[in-house]
Image 1 (tube, rainbow, N blue to C red):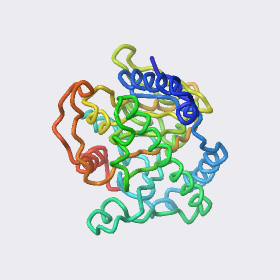
Image 2 (cartoon, one colour):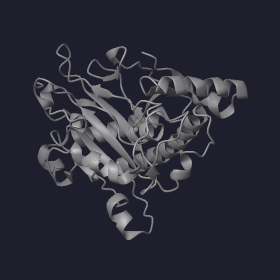
Image 3 (cartoon, rainbow, N blue to C red):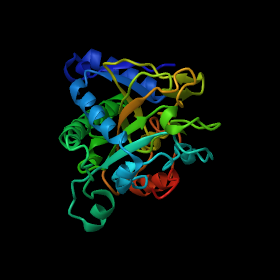
Length: 320
């Protein structure tokens, strides 16, 4: 499975020949698995571990304490176990995903009341974890900067102007999920076909994932290898492209299909936590397939956020 490690330090500061080689590597990788590992990202490890520690304290609270924060998929707050089934986005009926999440969403208003009411409402912060807010605000600021840098790298991988994608991220939407994957002591014995997150592709442009090594961890699908454990580097972030980017490139690049395995039978109490940043684009962006030789399949143009809303609704199981 060809998932390379990309050093963003080389992209930022390396000689032109090395930058060109790196862009070609990105292009090749996104044609197959749709995934990369990224080092040189500059995101502090203590910040990531601090968010995990604060969130774990909240997730370990009683159901009754957490219940007032419950929301549907796409909302701002707590997603209880059973609130979503990501395999629904592929049209597959499956048991709900074995996880809980705290979900943060883009919250800086544009000044357009209709747009702000749907995509830029204030976030909700758990009173039981007051230390979470300053860390998350730092983290999502860093993630947006990193995502724009990645989009510039992706443009270079296509031989396009550097603002091919970032011209559409002047005031973008994003989502940030803290995903908690407890063991069977919390979620119970998995049902047949039940995963921590079922097989799916992401919906936006790029996803930036900080994950932990585990037996019940991330797997990636390719046509040649089927399902395989994703390579892991504790220094790296995992990056994949989503459906909007695949449509934009006319399937030159593959929206990375993936899943998270259920708690393993030989380590049933394994607990993992992932920090997942979903980057999108400005509301109302018209996503239109780039012409050949980049684009290979001519998709009908879509309104980016009508597309995103339909996908979020598709994976919702209950009202939370």
